[in-house]
Image 1 (cartoon, rainbow, N blue to C red):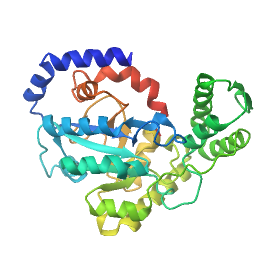
Image 2: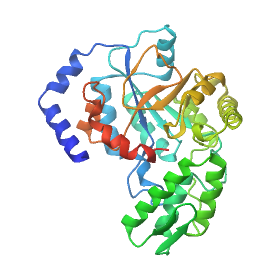
Image 3: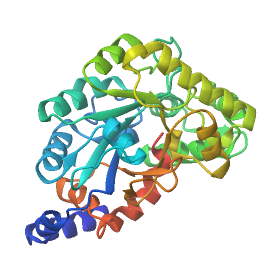
Amino acid sequence: MKAAAGRAAEAFAKSGLLSLLEALDRNTDRVRVVAYHRVAELAEEPDLDPGLISATPDEFRVQVELVARHYSPISLDDLVAAHRGERTLPPRPVLFTFDDGYRDFAEHAWPTLQRAGVPAVLFVPTAFPDQPGPGFWWDRLHASLTRTDHRECEVHGIGRLPLGDAGERRAAHRAIRTRVKDLPHVEAMEWLDTTLASLADVPSVHRVLGWDALRALARDGLSVCAHGHAHALATRLDPTELAADLATSKRAIERELGEDTPPAVFAYPSGAEDERTQQAVLEAGFELGFASGRSIARVPFPEPARVTRLPMLNYASALFRAQLRPSVATLGRWLIDERQAKAA
């Protein structure tokens, strides 16, 4: 399906219709907020979950150049000011955002953005910078399943999972990941620790930027914002836990960045949100909450705690460009349904 969508997008681009639509589009109130996780080569960090790679460095460079040529890159300050009615955005505005704070953002994504003069936002789960812990749970899961010598495993709550080949291990990854996201956060992490302990002795897969690096990026113009504290799904926290997680992450950003603290905005881990969590985000003092979806956001935002972002799923350049058009953004709907659960 992805190949078919790519061919359709390539034909659309070659026909000249895409360029015509872009040239005719003078709208300033339709904002494309694009969401990435990692920018890296597939073999660069074999212990990290490859499902989090949104683009290779070369693909990302092409995408940034396309946006710089055909659209108007904007900053978080621009977006917030437009939402407040204090500023008019340029035609075809695009905001680049990144989740989780992996080190490859500083190695690959940020240099490319700087060379093109394109602003960006990095959403960081504030419990992870400078912490000696083992890393994100999905990377630990990937490394455990990749390294284990077991041919099968018995997992509480799931049953027997065969691990004989790469396909079976991918299926096991999906099954375990689904259960993690279905459980309350604390219970999920305890269950996962028990499950992984039975698979393999995996070294730390902690690859998150530290606060010194994040402060340096902020001084260079990057907006570093909250992605929760523990990267817990907001919908899997009770009201007290959610309020504490939101408050802790907001305070950490303010404490660590000081005068470089950007406007208070929040991105839901894994895009998990509902009416209850949206209200909690606003009550915590965040002006905007970024979710995940297929639509292109309109300014001012009618639902400020649910500003939709377009997930970037390792698209070829033509398909990436097509995703930025309101009339063809649904080309990727089946890809989002299939892979959105992997975005953490």
